[in-house]
Length: 164
Length: 424
Image 1 (cartoon, helix red, strand yellow):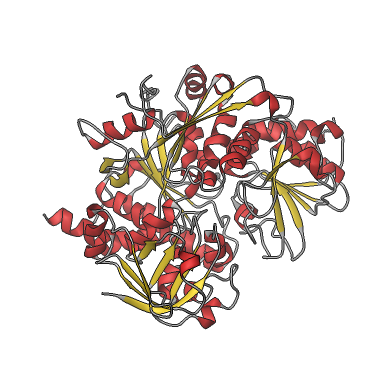
Image 2 (tube, rainbow over the protein chains, first blue to last red):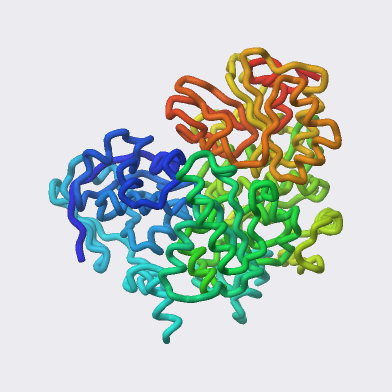
């Protein structure tokens, strides 16, 4: 299913301390985590973000700690997809494992500006910028990861794998 | 074409005939690890699966170390989740407050990790154990949940980068400076997704604590794992461990001569001096000598990077008979109970307290802005920890500089960033 929303722009090397500061890590409550999403990178992000919105960032998004609270906070805040020029590896696997759609797009911040209307179709690998009437082809996930994504995350995937 | 040490360990654990970078594999794990921040999510997911028992209770390790001893009620509840799960699953490698330590200092010290192992931990600094010649990498809570259920992890086989260090180390230069130099050179995503093989004549004579500090920060260059081929120093270290949880010395792998690397970097260690990573990235590295104008409010000596006995000995050497400047809060945190006790026996604790410092029970504490020394807005710390991101140690308007224990201790005396030669 395509993801549609307005773009929120962030820089390079956005780390997990900025995505969800450690001072909020004493909980597993998804709504509480969502209310502090991106707080140390953009204080009012959690108040402004609307369901379906898309995060667009530079290189190495999600670097730093392994806290899964980071993709969980983003997903629970209503963000439908994260587009970045590249992702740090633990964030990448955490997002795949919990079913948060993420897309690597070259020159993401040249192509997409603040507030642009974006549609992401992960199955066809196409990102459409409605505001600028452009569309970009991105590489699809390798088949191995697609299986995890299609299952709805790693836990569902291993359930199926165990049964088969 | 030959294999790198990383490829050999993955091959062994994937039960395949051949292995190539970029390939996806399922690998059997020898150990998995969670802490009071990451394990509660993993336990929640594990219990949803409806499986009664973890795949092997001897291969699951739980350490409440981040916000423990519990800093508030919410943290206490998180820690309680670990204690309860350890009890119902009969997990012996659960380390309660008073017996615990900062996980990545504790596990090697307990003899829980051996060369040739495949270890995953729901903590990014799990890459530390590469110093013992193990493949070890940080994952998330869901990965930990899946590993506890199946004993396996999915991995993409990384390409390997080789980092060759040669030449004699200058005075006060430790493993921390070597890894900061490397990160300063390649950047915080310079080794993204890659295995970082650390080698060369300098490494061959580097003691285990320094090796652990180096592999610990592989993640700060975006690496999947840091790894050092096991050798005589590794054997000696393993034989010196008194509380050995597992028998034997593991399996010593090394890279083939014709192994493939996506990049090879060489560093002349004679040119490296004590370094400091300035805010807000570990790659923002400058010589300590060039930062003498930077005043500081707090010094933290501890963490999974530099909270080991040899680190405390270096700091004590500089602080013996001296006082931390009256404007500075000095916080020293031995990484484990054993290190704590050794530091007391050797008289190091006395030196820190007489210098006007705090000598704390083991905890990750201030490293991630948890407790035991949180910074106020506008405050600045120099720390032997591993990250200096915005707000890492407290208020988003505070700053963290990263260094080795000698620079941190010298800075405590001077009240500003100082080269150890200024003090001793």
